[in-house]
Length: 323
Image 1 (cartoon, one colour):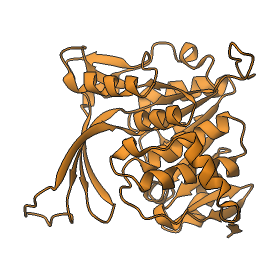
Image 2 (tube, helix red, strand yellow; image 1 turned 90 degrees about the horizontal axis):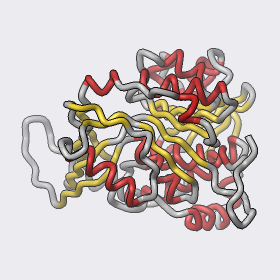
Image 3 (tube, one colour; image 1 turned 60 degrees about the horizontal axis):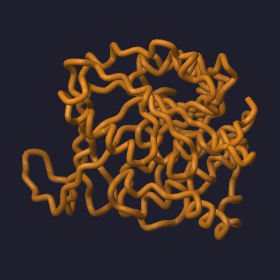
């Protein structure tokens, strides 16, 4: 698909459609995660936007892409205040939310996040089962004109027709495979790229060894595959060879939304025409910067910050090894 042009004749920023879940995160900052059956006092509390697809859309917008979100939310407007707050926050970030579907009578998803001083987080999420019945009316029309689609798998039946329509149109489709679902096989078949979490890959492949797990999934799909493993870096499958890429050395303050930033940045980089390895490096830099900042997705970086980190770390970003 040829890139669109702006009024001045320069290529317009690519449109990235993010499809999946949008939530409100309520974050409690604590010194350490409390033991079961005990109490602890939070030093701070914050309410921010969250959800894999919604956070990725914010990341795309901050990095200079044109972000759209398709997601089921509770409704209607004015009756579901959580959904209203989610949309208001996304609008402030410049995310196009016209493809969001409000489902009357259901509450929008909410998460409680416990953030420890270590930077690690524990999440409890609520999403109403009736939201799983929401479907996009015309997936083909939705993906028309987009350069790439990013899906999460929290509402697999909602995102699957969108992914299939995008692939039928020849578009890039990247899946944030954080956990296996009942539609995993169909979703793998509908994607051009899949980025797993370490736990998600292990559960999907049925083995603890990440290189072996990548090879197993690679035998099931022609999609380009990678797996992120926190501070241990990432692995990706390169024409049958498992390669590793180290992470950027940063002091983690808050890892909440780092994976979402990674997926949004990677999808945008692919939409811009970068090869997969370069897209992974770009995404790794974006996620690393986010980890140095508190506030979940509020810490997502701007394009210039990511490019500056890459430019100052040329020796690092080219450091890949084979397994």
